[in-house]
Length: 237
Image 1: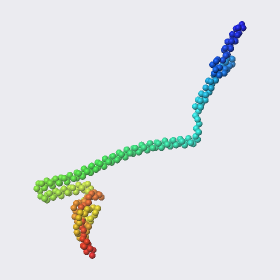
Image 2 (image 1 turned 30 degrees about the horizontal axis):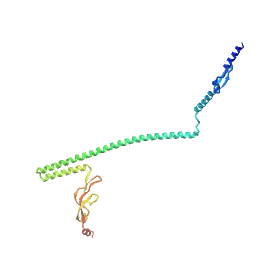
Image 3 (image 1 turned 120 degrees about the vertical axis):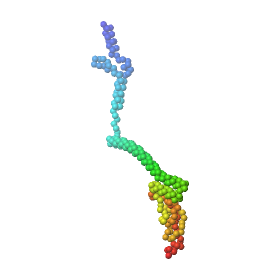
């Protein structure tokens, strides 16, 4: 009977003894209400506490140290900068579109101007064709033994056709003989002595001058009358 009690006592002591792992880890045993021993791992408690604190610190956003009006000003600045970028992009688009339209208009006007110039050239050449016809007829009349008067009529007709072609192109001859000498319109080739009242007047024309509108194509080559100094003094007396 005594041995049986000792055996029971030894078994109870073994059940309530603390395991070696708990003793090495430094955990403290705890006893529940019925007398059972519960082992608490302090290392696990510390780890869980540290992880919880780290998670809480990571989940909580740090408060901004800037005043509210500063944040508002920065937001307005970003908005203004974005608007400037949008306006600049729109301006670049409009400028590119305007440049394309300008280039197209310039090309269209250039083609139109070239076409008008070719049309004017064609009209002028067409007006000169009768001149060539009259010259051909004058040559045939002279070669066929026609009279001098017939040849002269052919030449006069040729000159008339040529002057008509020049007039259709806006070219006008300059009236020179009897007009006062004008160095802007006339080129003096020589002079001749004349009466004082005809001094500085055109007395002969060697080649006709022409103008187109207000533009002088070429001056007339003329002879200019000059009164002698003696006659001029006698008239003045």
